[in-house]
Length: 293
Image (cartoon, rainbow, N blue to C red; front, side):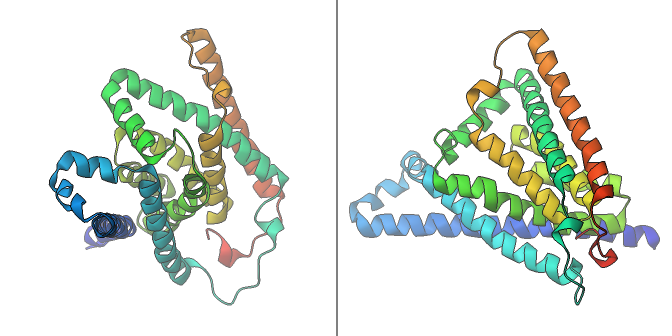
């Protein structure tokens, strides 16, 4: 009976992800339908072209359209999962938290260091996978180009830096991790939520670095006692990934330089974890009812 109950709790952890996936499918189909209808209304002669798979694919692969669909999905998912999170996990009728009980300069510096370390560590994870299976990287690169990361627009930047972090943190480090912790220890719960986070991205390359980064998002949220901290960490990570200058990424063939960069990234991540723990101890006490929210 206990095993059945525990299995049920674990399966229940899939519901937030399935809800987000359902929203994504509905928004995508609605967006495609609306775009096709508007095109036919403006150019009735194009109705014949819509039966051509190649034309239809090219028509739908507009970067602004894809970024818009992604942004709309993420906003709806953020509201839906945010409401779920608020109703189920946010304490009611509690004293207002002071900002000093959430974050301080130590924690902010820690998140920056951890973000920098994870940027380069995740890059080497991608490089390793690309060397094992180049086709995985080609698929990922084409996807990034189709969305518009070759030429970042204001809409894409807004989605990447603000909307996506809020939405994804509410889905995975919010509702999913909360329920997972009720069914298993944090270590296992964190692996489950970040595994789902990786799978949700839909391709091997994105899934791999999302898995690695998701582990640390879960750590930041759990140890810091607040989803706001993992949202901030996620925003910083995406901000760097969206706007980092190319000269900060070494693409040469020197193994020694790569080893030095990787070692520096590991040190930065380790220093970030150390400062984060220190910052948590130094901040003002957080009301017990808020811990983990």
